[in-house]
Image 1 (cartoon, rainbow, N blue to C red):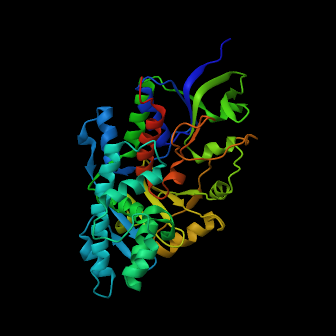
Image 2: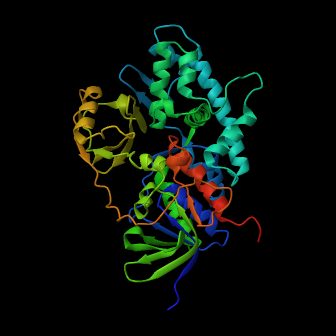
Image 3: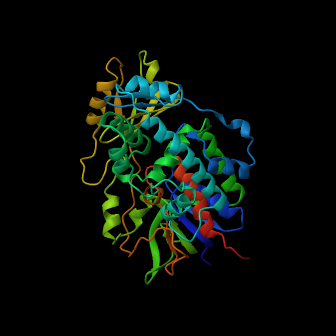
Length: 420
């Protein structure tokens, strides 16, 4: 029997993978998605961005589904900021004991720069000529004011040290650490501009609605799917990937392959030391049982507990009450947070609230394949080994769901031929 053949096999089930599959499928490409059985987890409310609007336009979705932004709060050991409900200047004056206009001025600059950068990236359809991170830096050069010495690739941390006092600098560090889930030392000014601009946009979109739309549209354009648990092994010819072999003995071949999820790396042996270190970085996920008691100031759609390792907390309304999905970012070399650690930290902040923290069981990963993979990011052209590495957390770390939307368009731009 003849083996099934696809133009592209995408490993991963996240928003970037599904957006790329939909965009390529509607242009006639034969796409197979290999992902976990469970659908991708999306925030209950997605912050608005130009790429989300562009995707909804392609979907043919009524823009009335865009809603006014819900609450977004930053809760740190020393500070508490309501980022959407009140004027930011009032929040600064309440939190800072010294009169300092620089923090607000910096955020105004970042919002302006982020708006221009987002519009540039939307208009260009992130180019196939550079890595996504390099493309952002290149686009950022175009909106850098002539009189401004600031480089878009400059370190946000270094800028805060030089241009803010200690108190304001700590507050800004908490802010961006919470928004990104990364240490401020790892963020550039361009990334900070995009993060803050997306935070300031006044509209949101329901995450479950986007998941439903993506599933509907991928089926409409005959994008095939198979659970990653059904993959027995990868089929290689030297260093060139040929296809996959399923547990039922069926071989599936393809011309191109995309790694769009860090989980998908379980199929490969990574030889690049830089990426071996990145594999050590994990984001364990926890959830709380329904919270009982009056904690209305904290019941935002999304609030952030900032610190050395931030906790990103998203509220979900479920039939049995309110639940919170808690993500704890852990960098390479640091001890992962345990359920007990998170429980203790939450009780320091929610001292008068009754709750219980339980661990979410993550899906089992497949055994790694003894293949050879040298990770390259988005290349100038499809490499000879026909494997494209496009993992959002690596190419555009710290930017959350908006980076997935941006990367989905970038992957599709690689998969769709420029001439027919």
